[in-house]
Image 1: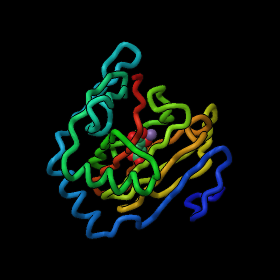
Image 2: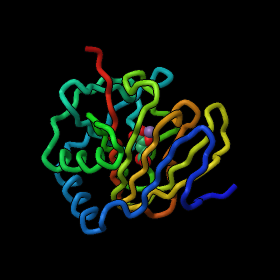
Image 3: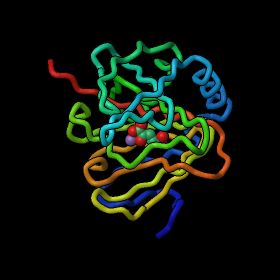
Image 4: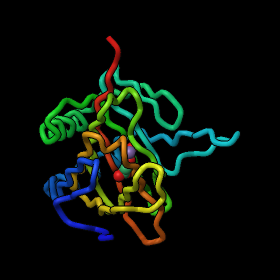
Length: 200
Ligand SMILES: O=C(O)CCC(=O)C(=O)O
Ligand SMILES: [Mn+2]
């Protein structure tokens, strides 16, 4: 297995588009500082095996008014777009080639913050979800495994200014995680833009 392969990515049954240095470093620095300062972070609780646990990261959900979203077992109403997030959305939409009406901000304060194995396959994301993930701050490892298997097949290093777009059948066949690490890592913000489909 070849960890940290460079482009192009050829994972079967997945469509991954990794764009390193997608953002100029000065712009990435500015957006990171502004988002750290402006965002009203929350730490939702998940209910597992009869107990509540705080998720191991901070989050915020922004979007169009109709883009309510379920994560960690809760329905979240979106905060309205800030001028900065509207600007970032426009850039990411242009890169993804489709409209995106919501964004989940994840704030990994240090290596103890993480996100467990999952697919972004909630029904409101439609049959072939497109998730466009912009990475700011500390670099973290993003692992991929096939659904139903425990072996990590591929890992990507998501660095400051990198955009990762997942589309097509990726979420049907693959899960991803950002594991905890004992190595010192700088604070990181990941923005995952999505299109929430609403009945109407
Ligand atoms: O932080 C990351 O790179 C992953 C975030 C993620 O998978 C998600 O928000 O669904
Ligand atoms: Mn995800």
